[in-house]
Length: 158
Image 1 (cartoon, helix red, strand yellow):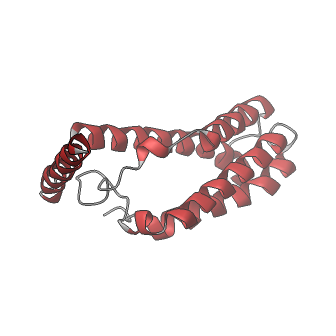
Image 2: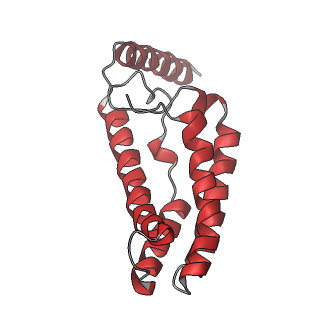
């Protein structure tokens, strides 16, 4: 029992220190890594959506192989475990993070949006290499899932 109390006290103290560090805009190495990892993940989404979006808009010629690769990448990213990317306190109080604190308050809604993205990405994966019309038909749901999260849970760029 005494060990449990000591661990609890140590844990509370560690949280207090972490909170103080975070409060002044500096992050622990773990939070910095989580932010870097999630930003890299989001850049992967952006790269795949850039390829697909340009084709859908007619900015570049449709290329079935490139579309399929981008859709495969998107689906892989959307289905990956991202739980370590989102520690509480890795929000806009940390330089470089655009995650709004509300994301942790509404975690079930955010997780549902993530599932919507994974579902839409799987539909895109099935459609992208077929033809341009199929790609165009699937991209709206992917964009809607991205927007649902970005509009409410991400700080706009300055």
